Length: 576
Image (cartoon, rainbow, N blue to C red; front, side):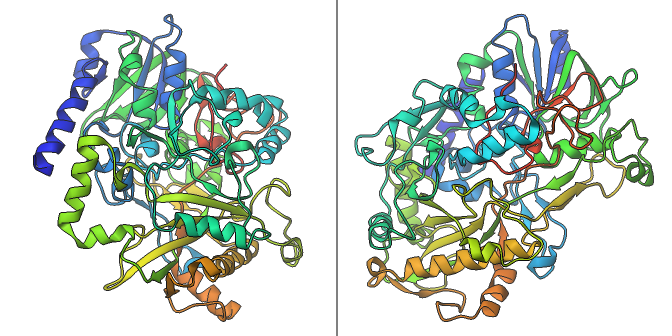
């Protein structure tokens, strides 16, 4: 069977599974049903599908999801875990956003992928499942004045979410006491060995004081290096679309999904009441409106949720007026506080052909790998390209050396930076030779940016400015993280394997040389949060209260990562 024939069979099998559901393509199909909806969820993505699943557990709730993108079914680069880097950017499943010029990155514009497909970014991300540190959640609870957002209060929801699948060789790679096994989102550890696995963990033994082994980074204590948990089920991606909208759920008579429905605004039907959504199905076509009897729930993500609010007149009244948008509710925090993780693409030439990019140069090998995955869900394609992650802190005296800034991490058990290990495949392969990647990322950033509007056209792309590495503290952390990667790669287990770092830097490079390399090569991990930040009920700042209601209005909530005032690796939805 050819690869093309195999792909067609996959498409047909997945299309058949969709017949169980009320997943619709056009407003005309929806109109024929002549339904009234209690809740309208804007965005069938990572968070939105959780919300609709939980709401429709109650048969008395009628729920409609409006998803701007199309179906996730049958898209090979989404389904196959190893192909995840192909899912974005510049694909039909991507919003294809770019940032504004980033001052700290030599004024470069950065591609900024967001999932434009059912499942949202959970359908196009790199499948890592990390919860962050306990201190992150506890700080969130303290900031918002609501203890229900603390780690201890949310752990039961983490277990309820997770269906952790154990493989025969997983002993010692995770702690079963900190996982759920009967949930909805499938989670597993890597199932195919990479050539660098043993060397990574040999280094944790040799340099244990700096790079300790962590049996399970999802325990609430994440410092150290361990195996990456991944949202994979039986060799295929587990997204919010395949889990929370699985056939057993979407066949519910009170659940409907309308695809290709791009929401432009939420409309005020009476003073301070926003229960009507405006949307289009054709960029040059007519506007449609639908009204929820109870609530509209924005789950459009950290970029599109604030953009919809702003186009609806909810934001800074002065700024909106300057764009010829009529203010409907003055809420200056909308679109502010954008927080993201800066990533540095950094690789090493190696003395080996046993790295993933070998198949990029060998079409026959690539087809053999796909055929193995397609026939048995085995082989190298069953995992995304990363098997290990590490989380680390910068020395206190270095943090305190930056005048005017305090430690942005939630506590002394929370990382400043992450290291991502890949056996090739992430960046374009060099003309000759093989490589591995050891990427650092700043995960407790001090820099803050914004999502704003260029004009009053709701179909225009928003202005995305994460201000990556703008804060001097973030620049220091990235420089120290890069030095850490170089020290890791210089350890004894890599002596006969690594030839040299790529990019013209090494352990003898000066800080100025490292900074220049960072400015020219850093980008983003695409983890935007904070643009509709949650705050205490009576606070004058923020966009939503701890129950996720938009402040000062009725009938409107936000349920996605835009509500996070700081970054969280994993967000669970509490919708009481």
